[in-house]
Image (cartoon, rainbow, N blue to C red; front, side):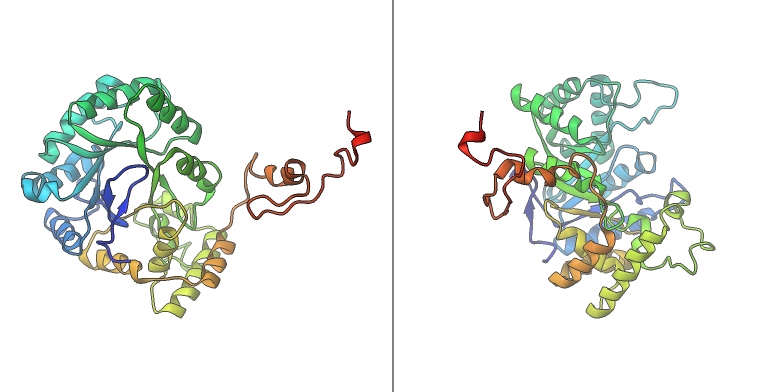
Length: 361
């Protein structure tokens, strides 16, 4: 699938590329990342290939990521209007100020104005709630977002890193009160992180939310550069967050990725990206790149087409046990269907059900 074969995001008409360019590495303010010049070159390469979806956040590189996008794109209206720029609120940019971050009205409106200034644009295409703020009622958040939409400062709304039950509550608050609903869900999802398949992915499908996975390579764990032999000695660039994920299970996944990659003349990272992009419910996968070469390599994942057998191998090696009630519900099929076949699912008669009219009270 080429980068310019666009996908409508969730229950909306917003067209986005199948791979979204994540910009958390734009700027060297955190001690690592891309220079301003390299960041601009990466954006140009992505856009020249047909990409139109940029993802940032107010807190990325202390606000510099947004500023780089604003300097390179936002100040040029013709370029800016052709792109879908997504940013996030909730992160606190002001230590010591309890209202400097969060999902309350005061913080959301201030964060939006600041992002608009740094991005040098009059509107944000997709405004994400970065994660769940348990101290703010969700109806306050949803009403504030709706006000920003009605003012023309925000076009669409999305939710990131929030429990499924809270996402559903937010969605129904919006639907019942004629406010702006969420069209997308941003979550960590990869071969190494599949627990989201229990609750978050089914919720997104029911609630009309397109899924945009972040960290599809688990911080580099799924690239193949970490092995059983070097995992104890190599020091990952992101420290403990990566090191703690160099588990035996993830090394098994890497072995399977390497085997499939060898069959396809691809890299393990490209296979991992192809797997995630072909998962049910996934709209646009967020990829990061600190160099042009990394971006080009990641974009080649769109040319990787896995066979059913290859997908099965990857599914099996990365499978996670279902949690309750998903672990229990398959056992209720016979009870519900009474030995009939429904939507292709067969069942057996439940032995504890009445077996004749005379047994039925």
